[in-house]
Length: 325
Image 1: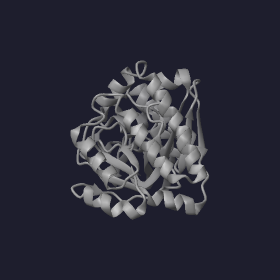
Image 2: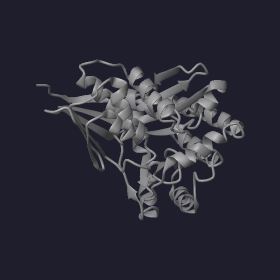
Image 3: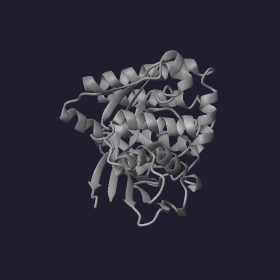
């Protein structure tokens, strides 16, 4: 039996500049971090040649081509595992519509587990690249590249997307005390609104040329957040997130709505410095940066929403059990 644990993520600035339509001309940049909430993939071999997949439903098939879970199907084809296997996926949070990068974490976790099943060691870079190939090139999902890379590498990272398609992943070095204070200022609330991200992201992708000036500002904000993290100017990060959220809402019509706007403004009135809706927007989780002495007021203002406590996660995808007979 093999168990792989792969983190989810939150991002602070630069989202949208990881779309090929943008970075292939101007280069893109995001600042994001893995968090201590995870996707788990469990794999074991079967006594026969059939394939059993367990997620929100169960599939039992004889051929890879018959698998309906498209991420499992394409990951198995990519790695070259064709029969005699059981695969189960589990998540710490609602796996659909969360805005925490769960689909890409699932893809990275599946690849990592399948390569381990075959006895092959692979780098985070290879896992991220192949996850992008599956989601973007093969399945045609209207998404960028940041989620796959932060899931594979983990940590607090600056990720630069070069015009030639290469990706540079850099640690953001912070003293431990400073990193702890930053983590303590982050709050995450579940809006209770689930949505399919594809429609929002498709519109956002289609609008890239018209919104390029806005995306240029959002890319510059990734530099601002990076510098503020290094300098320890944590409140500055909250203010940049607030400006970034107001830019992001211009990229597609369904990124925000009346309910989300009301939640966000209530949080600011209660003492949060800034924030955003995680991921594509339209629902999922509301991420805030708030000094600890104001957090009780924010919790009171958002008492109708469930809070998800979080900490920064140092590691990317990793094998936490490898028991082979």
